[in-house]
Length: 182
Image 1 (cartoon, rainbow, N blue to C red):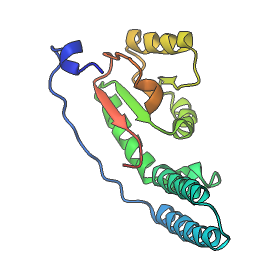
Image 2 (tube, rainbow, N blue to C red):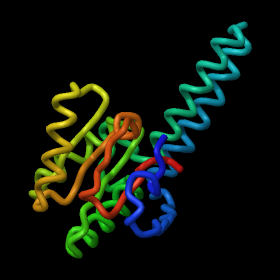
Image 3 (cartoon, one colour):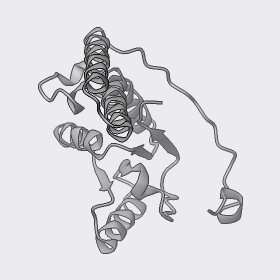
Image 4 (cartoon, rainbow, N blue to C red):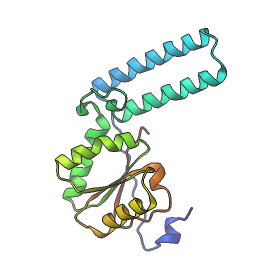
């Protein structure tokens, strides 16, 4: 991997800011509900003689669901309102402030389904944005990168963490957000 110093030594040092988000009451309740259900399921699997491999896979799946709830309850409970996600509430505030101040923002997430939940909201608010995930062809990816790089009126680029980490140079942005459970 190339370092920032090797690619663009003229760029200033990064400023890192961690925003801690306490879950909403509904989000915490759903988390506890899934956590208790997961524990019961694991006990039932073990008592039923499940193999170690099956127990490991079930554990990883259950941990994934808990991590998704931390991002947005709609990832596991589609009927949940968008207001139940404290991370999305924090992102909305951050984006509103950044866009008002003329910043251009990259939003990365490992969950393309989370990015998909953001897109209709951005369209409703008429916030220009680009999108890139691993399912896109090389031509589509380059088209989105070029559109963002060459359109100062598009303040936002949504990228899947995996697809965005494959050799992209997005110098048109000055702010990066990792929208994930950690």
